[in-house]
Length: 163
Image (tube, rainbow, N blue to C red):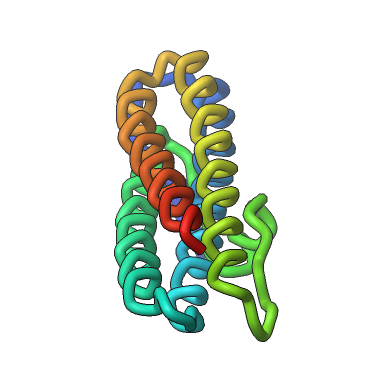
């Protein structure tokens, strides 16, 4: 027996929402990659600012993870499908993994700042696709995610000034 197709009702045109879904799936993959990298740095940070960085990284990881369900559900609400596995994330992510045995705290701050700014770029691409598709709900929610990523980048920048 074959599985029934996923047909979420929407008034948006399917061709237009496919480009939105593709952009959001890229954002979702980058969010998971950034979440895991932020948790990795949270677990492995050391040095005189350990407590501050450890707590900041944990707060940021929690915020990033909280957006993942919202992103995936937005893809589904537009009648599309989203990522299904770690392999699927890897195929869609643009945020580069960091598997180094040691990363200095200063390099952690810099790398996470750059990755958050890369996420902002992806969010802007997704917003443009949503605008083109007439998907005002996606447009609006992306603004919140963009603001959060910009705030994380700002905090990381300010923390790095003394590192």
